[in-house]
View (cartoon, rainbow, N blue to C red):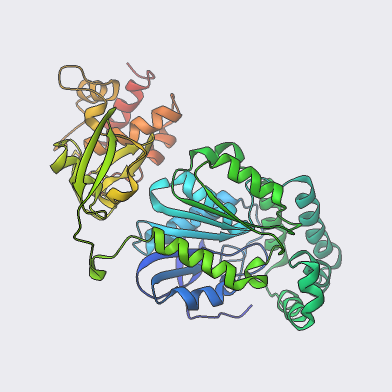
Length: 436
Ligand code: FES
Ligand code: FES
């Protein structure tokens, strides 16, 4: 399919990932679905590039990105997206995914919760129901049996829109058929991604997602039926759910105004106000739960949480390093997840349990990780260590006996400029009871 915007390219591991990078403002990552590439977002890129930096990649195996016939999972594609954000110097973004793109976005929120500012999913799924599995499998089998994109388009197009829309818009149906029928990607990549969708199953882990989440489903969608929407809504208790009752998988096309109004309202509510747009200088009261105690602070809504912890609550154990979400020195736990407090606005903190290094223990009674770091003499200058301990605490909370690889992965967002890495590893294993 043709590029709707000039595409840049980033080498991510063994793959070239092409992407559109349009506009300025708080980053917004758009992840396309199984049938298509970044151009599926053409109207949305045009609408949002005035207010956001819009990144719309072609996923591995789609559009202009590398086409390789090899097994792939939605998690693999999520790691590509996170690496692309790294490459672009983007610490945190709104992430919006369509169908398979929503499945990829879920993995991003699970792998790197601190990178996903809000999660938005259109016609997506955490696990497909039996009906959706059959429809998706059939679409793949037509391609496998005929080897023809045109045949696949002809046999699939009725799955994307409602019967009413199909009947009333023959030219638009013909245009969708032509678009899918003119696909040029390696067919094996579609087949592999189709299997990735069938295998995708994050349902049991969705309750871990704590960022603001918007779930949108089509009432007549046979690919991701409403059952899939309801399962996700039940698993992410704080999620907002919007159902486009009379539309199908392509409700963005069937009800564009409803979709754009929903999205614009969401983005307006959840996009941090940029400093250049002028922060409100009206201080407000916010109630925070920190280390098991309640505190009320009076400050501007966009104040980074690290300032509140250090200056208002005098919890100086949380360090300030880069101030841009890149070094991890300021890591605290929010509801047990490691988060960079320099990159977390005050307004997002009420209603959550915040834990700082002081909440793990004191000089007189150190916590298990603090004691292990002392025993292993695991600090040199020590500036990074409190953030590292907080990331390790989150890891041990969900994985009591982590492997070396899991420890390394958990500390990916913590930089240390000194040289105690082996001791840090030993200290974490000691705290886990694996090394004494
Ligand atoms: S100070 Fe927050 S990540 Fe560096
Ligand atoms: S011990 Fe010095 S930066 Fe990590």
